[in-house]
Amino acid sequence: MPPTTESRLEGLARTVVSCQKCPRLRRYCELVAKRKRRAFMDWDYWSRPLPGFGDPSAELLVVGLAPAANGGTRTGRVFCGDSSGDWLTRALYETGFASQPTSVSRDDGLALKGAYVTAVVRCAPPENKPSRQEMANCLPYLAEELVALTQLRAILVLGQVALGGTVQVLRSEFGLDLKPAPKFVHGASYELGTRGIRLYVSYHPSRRNTQTKMMTWPMWIRSFRTIRRVLEPRAGVMGKGGSGEG
Image 1 (tube, rainbow, N blue to C red):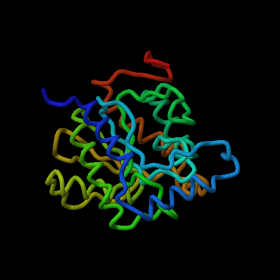
Image 2: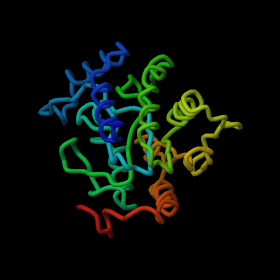
Image 3: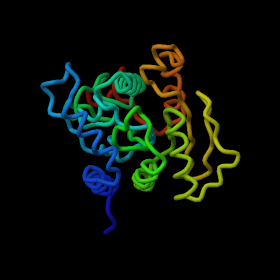
Image 4: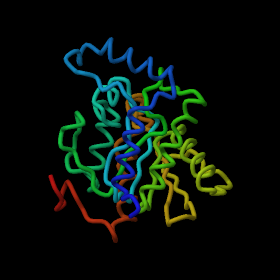
C-alpha cells in the first residue's frame, strides 16, 4: 500500500527536524536559544529546524522565507510567536483556513483546514539572509511537500526570496518552463500549468514592511480573500463565521 500524504509529511518532518546540513545556521539557532530575548527567558527554545505545518489535504500552500530567531525557533512552529505569524494566523482565520485567530506555541490548539504553511529555509538565518548553498540544502524539503500535497490548487509566496526558491523548485523538480519568470509584484498571480495550481505573490508581513506601510492589512487580507473565492466552490469554511472546529 502506498504511503498516505499524512505519513509522507510525518516522515519528512522527522527528517527536517534532525537536519544538520547547514553548520552556520545550526550554530546560530543554538546561540539564539542560549542567549534568548529578555521577554522569553522562561522559554525552552525549540532551536531545531522546522518542518511545515497544516492540513495534509491542503488546497493552499503558504511559503515564507525562514523561521524567525525568536519566533519559530523559540516556539517550534513555523510562523508562530512573532508579528509575521500574528498577521498570517489572523488572515488564515478570517478567511476560513484556521481554527483560531492567534498562535503562540506549537501546542496551543491551532488547526489549519485546507492550508499548509512552510518556508524555503528551515532554520533562522542571521539577518534573515541565508546563503545560496543553505537555500539549496533546504529546497528539496519544499519539493517533497509539493509532491506530497496532492490537493494543492494555490501557492502563496511571501517575499522575493520565497518566490525565487519556489520557482527554482518548480523548474528543477517538476520541469515547469515558467517563461517568462513570475515577477515579484504584490498581488500578481500566475498559472503554473500543472495540476491546476496557481501561484500568488505577496509582500512578506515582516515588521519592517508593516511598520513602513509597504504592507497594510487591506493589502494583506485581499490576497487571502482572492484565494478563498477561487477555492470556495470546493472548500468548506472554518473559523470566523464558519462551521468548522474552533
